[in-house]
Amino acid sequence: MKFQDLHHDPAALAELGHRLAQVRIDQQLTQAELARKAGVGKRTLERLEAGETTQTRTLFRVLRELDLLKRLEVLLPEPTLRPSQATRKADALPKRATSKRANRERAKEAGDKQWKWGDER
Image (cartoon, rainbow, N blue to C red; front, top):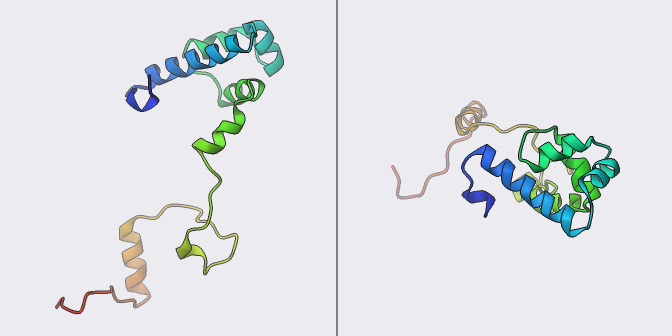
């Protein structure tokens, strides 16, 4: 089942837990062994595999021990500068999102005119 097809959090958590359990089993680890290696309680791992809520830290510890943590890079790649930001400081990634309305108001305050095609009046 694909995560994008799961429209409710409990179903997504259950699928995540099921997949983690399968990876653990494929690696020939018992719940007790993985829990010990990850530094979490066996009951905590049982809850994670059952799709119950746990701390994010628990998920990271389990992913690390199952050698899955590196896959988060695919899910959430490191932010990079967009071409429009290249003229700013090299390390100046945006710190927050702004609304389109705020951008228009900022442009008006700066005296910028909105660009228009030549045939617009």
